[in-house]
Image (tube, rainbow, N blue to C red; front, side, top):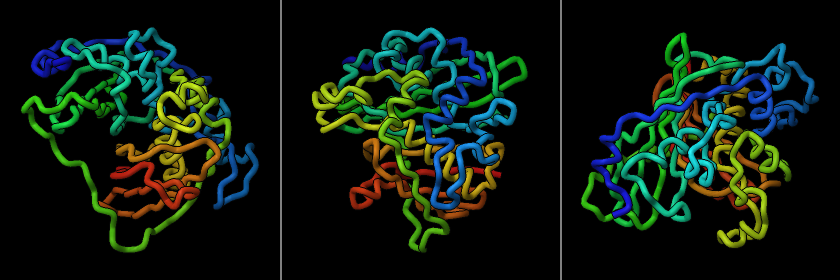
Length: 307
């Protein structure tokens, strides 16, 4: 079997040095739609609320930046081919993991923030594979990356990688992450339009997978046209939650988790429904759908933990 569970989970941690500065942060924020008008406020790109994402003298860092921080650092070749962030780059090269990248899907993502992310940083990422779950027809590889600098822990990323055709090895099925959508009406509904060139801009943060840019490659993968990066949708959604429900204060976010439930095409509009204190106090549950396709699912089981 290409996945040796015992070997993968027992392997010693792998470390990677990460560096980033204000240009990386600004580019990431632009890649997830910073500066664009919203239904709540038809503001110019230079509105002070947006300059917090784009102007170096006023900059704060959205926690989802953790998924791309250091993408300019040296990557292992398997991670570069997959193009799904530093956590994946380290994890997919772990001992005991030898899978066909064409069978790999990004199933879910969690970022836990230990303190506000700095605008400039040099940090060490430590990568492990804490678990591999058996879903019968597929395997789910859990990749964990813990990032710290000289001042201590910064963030932890848990990434779930779904590998088709690698299940049935008799392992643990793992916990269920499904969260029921509240029966009551959402406390807030908002929309975010995805620009036609959004994927082309977002990929400059380091995810060069041609699936998001090359129409011929997208057709080989079974899509009519290039699709948006899942982690771009992830960032768009978190920015919308921060701006509409957390007073624009990125430091209030403590953790952010999602399950990737469907694709987004550039030019579409994301519809976000937010429920406060669901599934518990200090948490915001979010459902993200494609408004142009009868609310087809995009992000599910999505929760922002906050102060």
